[in-house]
Image (cartoon, rainbow, N blue to C red; front, side, top):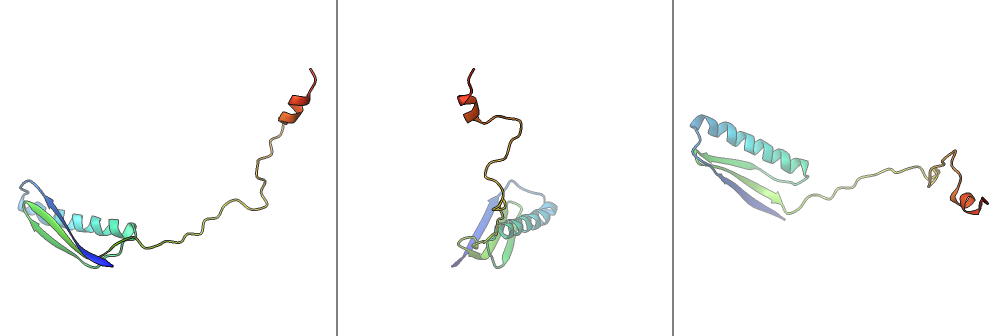
Length: 98
């Protein structure tokens, strides 16, 4: 299921020459964030005034896509505990006579 999402940010008065680059950066960073987090979306429409930046994200997914990853662990033939040399086992220490 998808939804439309409006992200609106209220600001102090910005100079007019700063509005367009700020809006473009907001849209680019938002699209990158959604893509990096595997959240599907349709189109991002941009709106701006000197006091507001707004993005209308259409067809935004409810949740992330499911991801399957193959994770490889240690080989089955590897020992469960590492072999330590030069150290006596605890059982030898407990049974040793002083």
